[in-house]
Image 1 (cartoon, rainbow, N blue to C red):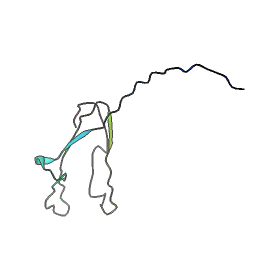
Image 2: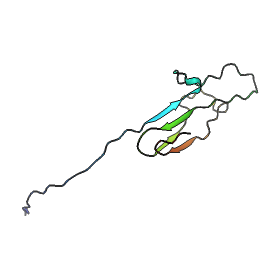
Image 3: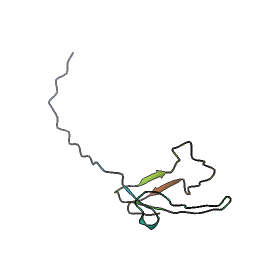
Image 4: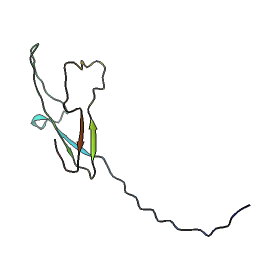
Length: 90
């Protein structure tokens, strides 16, 4: 049994957007690296970078070390997780 129906027009409204952040490293270096230089054994050296949400919506970031060769006990990223609203920078 088939039911005959008239065709209907269904309006669809959608939005596409980029998740975009701007990361700035010390001294505006373009190598995307944190330059620690020489660090003596037992010495602590801090480096900072900023992240800015330049998109339209909330961005949730999570920082992880991808390579297993990195000694994670020697490095700390704080905070490891971060929520940034539009135009917010931390």
